[in-house]
Amino acid sequence: MLGLDRLTKILPIIRKKGRKLKSPEGAIAQACVNKSQLRVTIEDGEEKYRSFFVGMNNKNKKELYIDALTRNSKHDFLAPNRTRITIFFEMNGIQYNFTTKFLGLVVFGGFDSLKIRMPKTIKQGQRRKAFRIEPSLDYPAYIRIKNGDLVKALDISGAGASFRMKSPLEPGTVIPVSLKLPDRDNFLKADFEVIVTQRDSTRLRAKKVTVGEYKIRGRFRGLASASRQFIHYYVANRQRELIHLMN
Image (tube, rainbow, N blue to C red; front, side):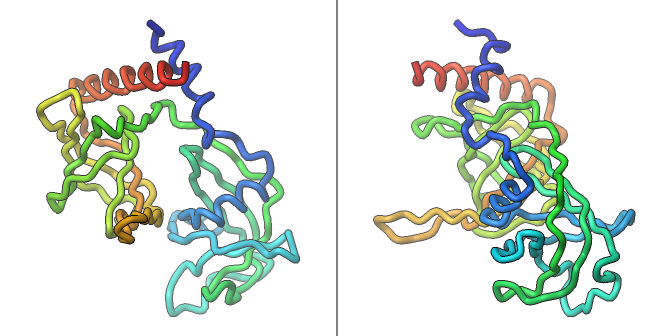
């Protein structure tokens, strides 16, 4: 039987989507495809704006575009070629950020957008320490959310989980949830803080219907220590199962 130390070394190898991106262009190109959500700060200000990557300039590789920070505004608080903005985003559990200059307001891809300079470097944070696993299709884990709906957990760890909903939840939102693990009869109660809401449609071919328009990912808050231990125990067993299937 493999110990947890051994498991934590092997599991990242099988998590292909955890590979590091080597260049700013590569990371941003992937983020544009994902329409990754952003947090934006102006100069050294504390106010944070929500936005998302709109796209890159295929002709001028030094420019990229993000969605407008506010609606019905000329963005007079931004000075072209002078104002510095810092952008934070996350992909595959890794935090990225970079500081760049605002170049002007444009319409790109049908969106009112901010044209910004492609950064020379992107700072990359550490991957979260808590490993998330995908529950078995035969023995799923369920999350009861605030409106009473029972949804399947797409992945889960002692720190958080993700699931799909038909309506988005604003990042930073905190809702009460109940978690049902396949190896336990009772629900584990906690608060859930939304970190990322990403459009993630899955179409069922046979019925031609769309399920779960939005992927919600976040962290557990106020989870009792006993409940967290139950989750860690479940995750460790599921890790062993996944490694066994690969051998």
